[in-house]
Amino acid sequence: MNFKEWQKNQKVILIDGSMSLGLEEQGLDLNDELWTAKALVNEPDKIEKVHQNYYDAGANIAITASYQATVAGFERLGHTTEESRALIKRTVELAKQAQTKSQGLQEKWVAASVGPYGAYLADGSEYRGNYGLSQTELVDFHRERLELLLESGADLLAIETIPDLTEIQAVIELLAQHPKTTAWLTVTLKDDHHLCDGTDLRVFQLLAESSEQIIAYGVNCVQPDLVLPALEYLKEIATKPLVAYPNSGATYDATTKVWTHSHAVDEVFSNEALKWHESGCKWIGGCCCTSFKEISLLKETFSAIL
Image (cartoon, rainbow, N blue to C red; front, top):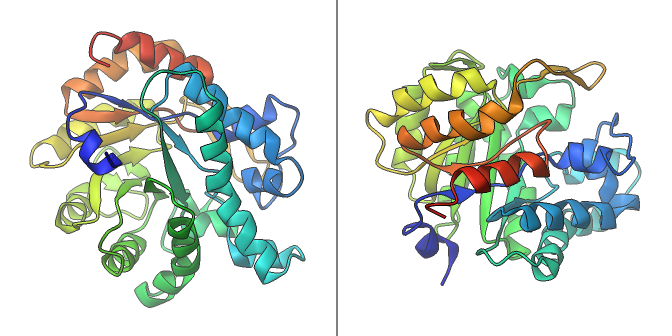
């Protein structure tokens, strides 16, 4: 059974948590323009370990370390085109290796991360949008990595942390060129009804609902207190499953690449997560500053219906 068929009968699907925190806990310094993709070059075993830990904690889906990995980004640091392409494909291989090694008994899948153009810029633009690029330019930017990830055999794509209407239109245009592809699409928020570039969530929703390749959509790497009102808004007309994997509630400084904590994380990934589920959110996980603890907590919270 493929992922698209499997997910239809699930009451809740657990997505993993932060790759960056898992790597930092193993001693990596990620203050780098490649961020987590830095580890692909020298310490891929640590990426695999993060994936395995999330699977062992109960995650159904591991998101690959390709969020900030692009051919252009690797080439800028001196890698050849072929080396860069191989590194991107390796992100899927590492998740699959972890999938095999994990002792978890749940169904396990690999989602290949397609991060926004802002992640390539490495300046926090994924929380602003309005890049000044055309839809065609953004299609061209995303095309090669998306195709490499599809060639690698990921079960689906995680098109995530998108802040910008033009970029949403671009990835939907690109997905339409790959009709057999399965993807989720999640955005970042300015407030509970608007993307970071100011676009109303309803505009994003209608585009996501219209795409045959997008089987679920929602929000990620947003403050936890924005999740429930955003889901309630989307729920009004949603016909597809909703997705939410917020950060821990920490605040990010794009210059220092440091997060400052402020929320009660345990409450977010237990009682708050139950409220998200009641509002139509079936795919739930964590983003920046969440770890295996939060995924274990989600597994415990939803144990009755997993």
